[in-house]
Length: 342
Image 1 (tube, rainbow, N blue to C red):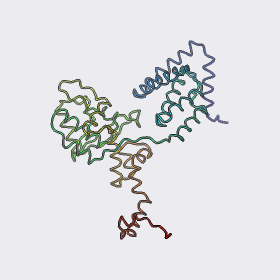
Image 2: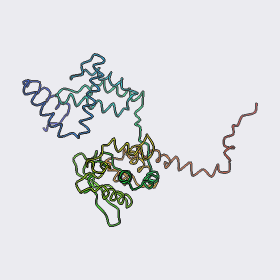
Image 3: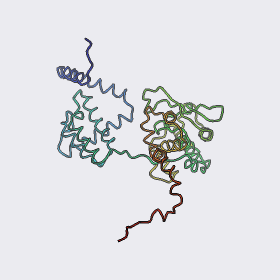
Image 4: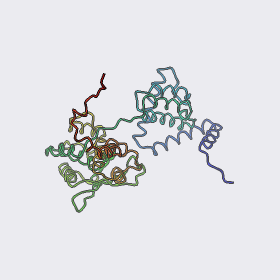
């Protein structure tokens, strides 16, 4: 009879085996795990992991707890409660992932899988909600209103190309700053395709494409010519003449967008959300929206577009169908308060 795979049993067997190894052998395996983690995880993931470990250590030390694994489940549950109302449920879950990964790197059982921690997270979600704040949308009309007013200085050409490309391509900021000049492929109608070498949903680099309109293509080409960029250079780099041709940092992209739109609440993600809103307004199919944004599931685009979808829902259609029934009434008629005699 074939053996049925059970992940929990498999983990327990590995931990039991490791516990019987010599201290030297165990340390060698831990070192091997660290080396392979550096190769397997994205730089941003590793950076987040280090930051969360430091944050958790500070929280533990303030309360006289030992932050080094193994950490007791009741301490992690208390940590989750302390974060409730301060961080979103998704961010807390990311913190728990980092604590789990720290334990896995030392081949110790994760306290985050304990029922106490699961209940603590459920309690936080129930008390504070699991709503994730969405970046405010920037529609195509808003984007064009800004980029078409920019001039021809090096900085303005760079910012015009960057913002227009972000709006057309629906690219994440990590994808935008990774583009090289050679990733732009012109098409016969004047539009272009951007080759996305790697993305959040494509960590192993199978590759994908993003669209650039004719206007955005011309803006990018104008910037490339003005900056004298070569095929292997970053597409979006510093605008100063003679500056190092290194990719813009994600934080720099955010500052550019805030400055050009004169708003402190927007970022490159705002154009990704705004693109989804525009697409739903134009009755684009969910599948075509997923292709444009390179999503692997409909969950995120549906979440981005829920405001627009509410106005296109069956409830909205029914209400519109019966609007003629109340069209003869004025706003004051509708707002009258009727009271019974006496």
